[in-house]
Length: 108
Image (tube, rainbow, N blue to C red; front, side, top):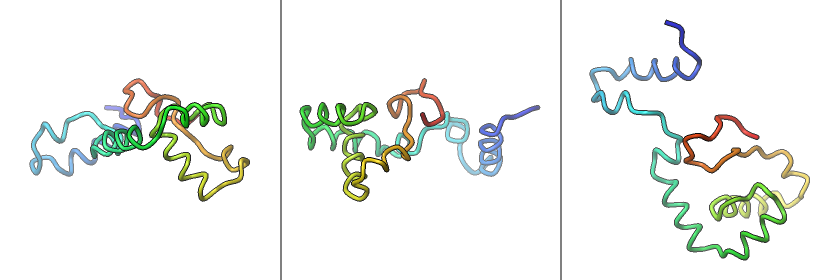
């Protein structure tokens, strides 16, 4: 049986916990960290409550890849510590929204 890198990683973990955890846990689909921990929904709701639509529109004009209030929240934190515009070109980001099952597994 030939496995790709992701399958090998999961196979090792599944074998290590076989008989120690139930099969529905061992064989469930892999989820992103924030999605699997539940933090994605909490942080998304927090950002929706704290940030306005006008702020998001302004951020979209500055950087086309700021697509949600949650991303805008992270963008503001980043800018606080790295205020120079030239630094933004060094930051990778997902091509589609987090939690989107069809999102590519690579940065743009």
